[in-house]
Amino acid sequence: MTPALDLLKKVRAEHRIHSYEHDPKATSYGLEAVEKLALAPAQVFKTLLAASEKGELLVAVVPVAGTLDLKGLAHAAGVKKVEMADPAAAQRSTGYLLGGISPLGQKKRLRTFIDNSAQPQASIFVSAGRRGLEVELAPAVLAEHTQATFADIGRP
Picture 1 (cartoon, one colour):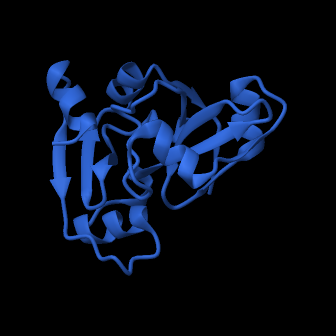
Picture 2 (tube, helix red, strand yellow):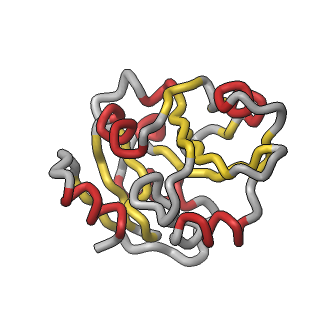
Picture 3 (cartoon, helix red, strand yellow):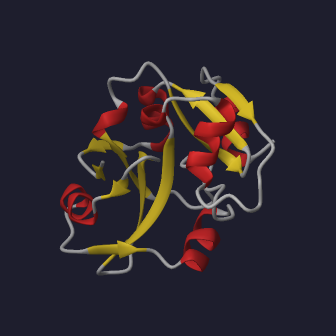
């Protein structure tokens, strides 16, 4: 179990766990999940961390097939500018390793933003806290348990 799955179990949130054999040579963890679990790319989301100009870490959940719109995230967070967070800082703050960062069950609660493209989906997949482990849940359930805001933060 991971902290993400422990949290979902504790709050009795409806979810399904999906695992696959992670290939250490995979260049994209999210696209590897799409391929190995035979999922629609629009349903699989990656968890990225960005830092504001004041050093605040922000969590961004965007489709794996796209990229994070840094200006969109800055606007949603009400800050002037954001840049991708230092990987070591991201791992320290969340308690997860890169490629396995889950928006759920992080060591430190960070402001979280989910791309609007998640809302129409019946369910989405995010990292369950380990490479090769995904959790499927409704976007509203993810937002509730991360206290996230939906915003236009993804680019195709």
